[in-house]
Length: 219
Image 1 (cartoon, helix red, strand yellow):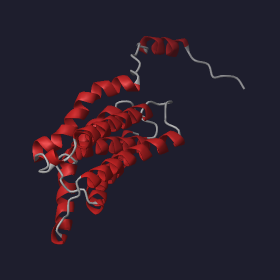
Image 2 (image 1 turned 45 degrees about the vertical axis):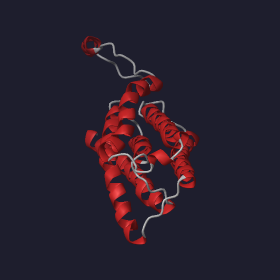
Image 3 (image 1 turned 180 degrees about the horizontal axis):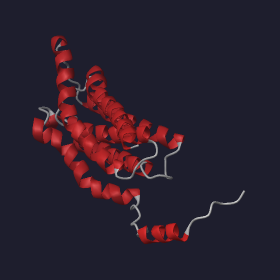
């Protein structure tokens, strides 16, 4: 089968249109650039909503230490999203499982450690109200965080928009929750599962849905 001929005029037009492009920096370099913004997102919740009343009663390694560790994991997830966004460098299924499992595990682990160190009882009549209020307050920081991470990812045209968007939501959620736990004084499993965990799951779903919508619009 013969190859189609390309006219000299078309070759010249293509040659004139070619311009050198700068390759994307490595994902870890882009994460370092994002790190100051990520740390600001962690601090945004307690700075805006106020520090938890019983913060001083927690050991430093549980309050600041675990929030710092969770922020580091959140930045690593953002790095995974930035790598996923580069065509040809998508994550394997095993890597994706590890990223999602790690993100959820750090949230559960910090919650259990805090609940054991300083259990807080919630009046039965206030449980639903506190869950909704905490979800709402966390989302007020989490949605802008998702927008920032999503913008960084979508500059690279991901080939799997749903996966990239879900990773954006997970990274934004874990970073946000690292600060949320410094203003929310409730550590009951029901509250954490529905309020904090619900906010992270909502960001994951929102990130995937918005990414698919943007991809369809772009196409």
